[in-house]
Length: 380
Image (cartoon, helix red, strand yellow):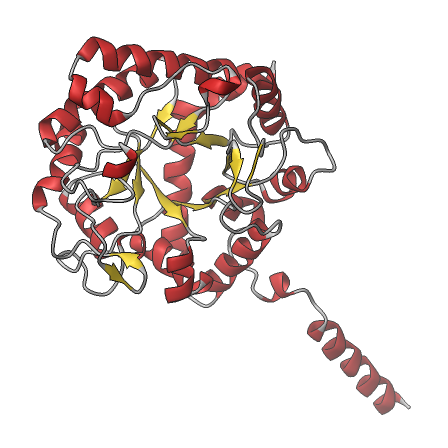
């Protein structure tokens, strides 16, 4: 009888072990809530409440932040997150209220065609970077930048994925030149006008994020595994805006682009490349701030590498915050899936605890220095 009881007890232990949730099997030195700080996600809704899925993820997973849009690319409809200034302020306030840590509340407000705060909604007009570069007037650039930065403060948005500092070296470039997103082909002019924009946003306490490192203003139509390939067109002078801005002022954040450049790394596109991020951006150029990824749900990246490999490579490359725009494709549970993947990668030793800790430390410092004050204001 005693022998049978021992067998029965042993079988129960095995059964319980097999039925444990996957997260428990891959438990690491980091909680899900700690790893949540490494990601920014997009979501649907002009307002949120305690039962909203994004609210649950903010509270349970302690997300690093969110990215907001006026247009939903998947459903091809407007009114995804942004409609009016009063509505946006209420949404931003709710996001902060549900967050344990000050969240990045980000949008792309470059001006011109790439603007989430549109004039038809009652927001101030923001002209394109190309227009300002051609006008080449400091007062004009500062005027538009100041007005936009003040609007950010009014509506509670604290992070702008701008300015673009790609050089306008190819007039046929479908994603930079043809959308008027670059100030100029002249590196010095790009530095000057990007500097005016950064200054004005700094005054209002709004985080700016330079993009797209290491530059794809020269892109034409060459592709590598579906990813923009600038190997034959890119020139080292495209790094000049980064070098000069890093030397002239405090730059807190940079966004790495999904750009393949065999001159720098023959194996991986920039966002997934240790040679580009840790090697060139951090070691050679000396940047020690926070690095954001471009959209990790990019069709080209997912088709070429898949989610797990893309996340593993990006973290090991030196990217701190993984951005999942959740717009071209939509996955309501993307945050949980990404955190599960990171837990697995750390548990298997594919991403080191030191790498994760370094990113968490950089994020915490940036939030303390730049993000916290505006979030505190929204909490009153």
